[in-house]
Image (tube, rainbow, N blue to C red; front, side, top):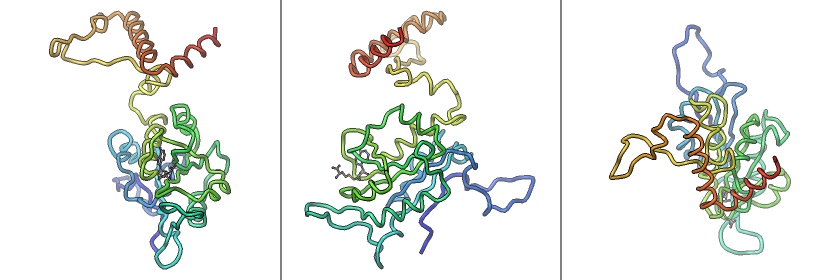
Length: 270
Ligand code: SAH
């Protein structure tokens, strides 16, 4: 049987002054945030997470990614992972015993407290994922993500392992992998040193519960549209005021729910 887990990142061999035993090297720096993803499609990882800033950070060991292939935990010669739903109906359900074996593998050597190591199942029934959740997860040592397929997972394993359900949004995907990648992206970019410019994660949409102001760059005039003159004025206080007003306008117009929360928070703090 092939080993069901695979580490991504930090696989490149680099020249060093000292000889070292490559096999003994940890795949992520010991304290780096780590995602363990249980999936029937380990080949879908790192996917986009291997590109650009997050991909470089993965190679540099600023975070780690381990996929745990669900298939080898399956039953019988064919390693069956799913079966028909009790009570009838369409589709297949991932078996509790099979998923439990993969969750046990994922729990090896990691903290048991869910604040330090959340264990989540990607699910349209879950709590909607948001920036606050990403922030909270980024402060843990890492996390385990269970990607469902077919109709989902036998309920008993979610109860037994106290798995939190988290949703990417009010729509149904074919599997949890895209949701896992989206949530890992949002979390990893909040880790220290991952984004080049430390300010860029602070100033964005949702961080201050307002949507972000519009951006412009060269050319100053394009198809008869000019950059708002205040942005070219060099007056930083004016620019800040303009950006703030734009953020407030966009939030009011597009997301009345966020605007209300923002107004309530402001009222509380005065
Ligand atoms: N029968 C389920 C949908 C299953 S979709 C239902 O109606 O609720 C198959 C898998 O895709 C799920 O097990 C889950 O892991 C994943 N998935 C689908 N939509 C998702 C979403 N919005 N957020 C996170 N994961 C999702």
